[in-house]
Image (tube, rainbow, N blue to C red):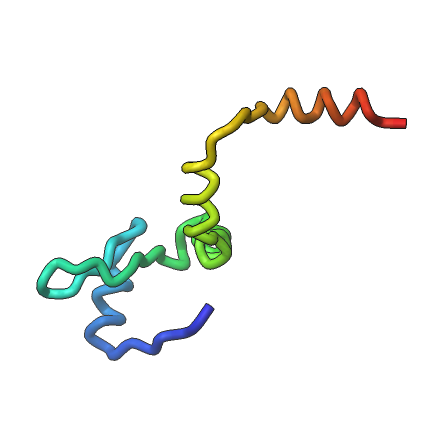
Length: 82
């Protein structure tokens, strides 16, 4: 993850935010998202979001074939345990 320094004006704006926010350019283009560090899960959220491979999620969503629930996989693992 990179660090982006902000000027005093933007720092004041971001310090007033109390929930996850969408950051938009003046033309409405989404630039990104901001989650204040004071939120309980902010650090965990940032860590998860920086490690998500969107292409892999799309590939899995588009995949056809048989899926199994977590319980089915665990049952199968228990059956094959020596």
